[in-house]
Amino acid sequence: MTTLGGHSPGSLWDARPGTHLCALYRGEAELEQTAASFVTGGLAAGDRVLYVASDRPAPQVRTSLEVHQVPTGLAMDCGQLVIQNFADAYGEPGELDLAQMEADFRAASRQARADGFGGLRVAAEMGNFADAIGSVERLLDWERLCTPMQREEGITSVCQYDQRWFTETDAARLVTEHAGLAPDTVRPPPVRFAATDAPWGLIVSGELDLASREVFGRVLRARLAARPWLRLDVSGLVYAEAAALGVLYQTAAQLPGDGAIVMVGAPYQLRRVIDLAGFCDPRVIID
Image 1 (cartoon, helix red, strand yellow):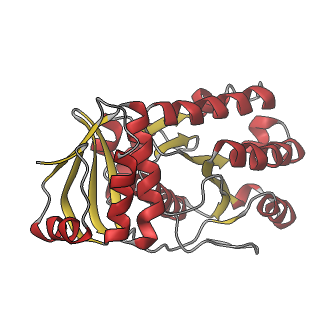
Image 2: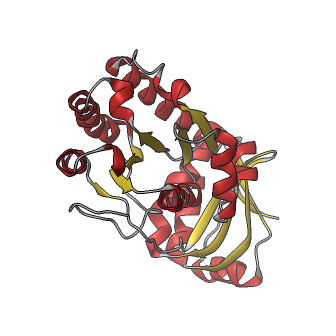
């Protein structure tokens, strides 16, 4: 992947909501790698991921994600991963309305939260977007508009551009309209949060520590805001710090009278940490 300056975050999993990233690729292999890294990070963080496929058919995108070990099945079944084509996301090429595009992405972000996800992430294959939108200048106007809009709505995105469509000067200008470059390689998420809807819940696997406490709180509150009863599957949790588990009990304390978090599959070590920390709330039921 070609880089033309700009900050590249080391982790996509805990990227700050509202981060507007750019990726310049040459060839499908680089595109697929960037896409898989971004989607993996977004799903692991419990966010909804919208993938806009413009250069490839949606079934091909799904297949390429699966080749890179992205768990698309459960994510698509519960609406955590959504794959759209260009027209569905932006409108018909040659008829793009920037104001309408902005309104649609704001609505999609709010719908993601209403559906119980911590936030919205967008991976967009921009390809030769300049031709679809009318000119490079108008494309820059769109990217310039996206940065404050995404910060306001908490939308994290990576705009994937085929560098072969741009001069080096125009590619550099595109980069400057973003907060940074998507990293070529990323650290694997320490913990993964997977949404479920039958029953309504959350699957937590990996290591829950201080570094993941903020993400855990965000996704847990989002699931409970949509429905105040949650099945929390922790059978895949291999390590948990008391301070991180404190988020669970602090969140439970704010639930309404009919709300509850039912924890299933809790290993002995996790129960031991809960006991030693003195955590106790009738709204947290350890099954």
